[in-house]
Image 1 (cartoon, rainbow, N blue to C red):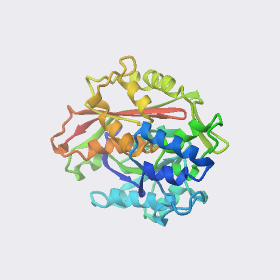
Image 2 (cartoon, rainbow, N blue to C red; image 1 turned 135 degrees about the vertical axis):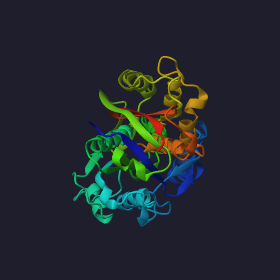
Image 3 (tube, rainbow, N blue to C red; image 1 turned 60 degrees about the vertical axis):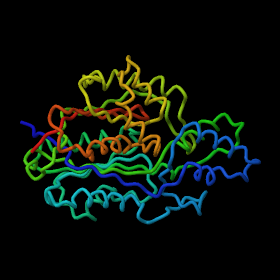
Image 4 (tube, rainbow, N blue to C red; image 1 turned 135 degrees about the horizontal axis):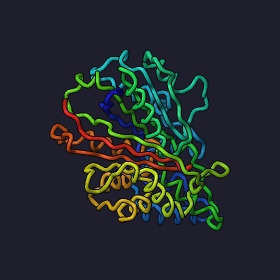
Length: 357
């Protein structure tokens, strides 16, 4: 019989925050082409409405790619996430048997040994299962990685940690020719994607008694893939085609929403990947999901504040439910759903309910 599995803790990490206006001044300075790219960028920022751009880049060094602080190195971020998840001492390092990480863009080139194994070593974890590293699964990577941790905990009497991050600003490669066909798409992706990380502590049933607060008990987690190329990279630049909002939500409906059986009536807590406002708003359409403004409000708020974090995006929304002031009052009648999707197209969904000790 498989263990029940719980999300016991969630932590998120942000680098320093620049306002969207500051980002325009740095990436699209007025000195280039009589300020034409700058003016386009300012109008785009106003239209998209994102307040901050979390970034690891040094503004003084741009366009050279330099980390603003050594603390932003992926190994430092991963180690910090693990330490924050374990800091309450509810479980020990010896209780953790598995580590899964996922990302799309990272700033370092030291790929051997794997980042996951380096994080495990630095944090003194004694894993009994090979650490896993998932790369290039797009914005859905977080749920693929979390699925691995859930499966591990179902089969073992030990905890697992999932670490997700992306450092999208590391590949900022602006096009300055406003007459070029790719200018608008390049501008959109340059301003849309942000840097951030999330850590999730997953535990099996035998460790549940160590935690007093209600925890998210995972009911089901599924992942899927449909081949598609509306989001891709071309010559080092991200390309986001206009038809993405017209295709991906429909695919997610067929491959994730219908199999999970979720509806606006049977789920109270929604965490949707904030890939962009037009895509997010499609989940209010009856043929996709039919959510109301309140049900998408948390995903919308995270997007308007920070933009798209890529692989950890949906976890920033999920964390808001985990940190709710009314969390002690939640019980098994309170159900939630997290959905993410991205390039590939990779996609995933998770349902849960709140479980008291």
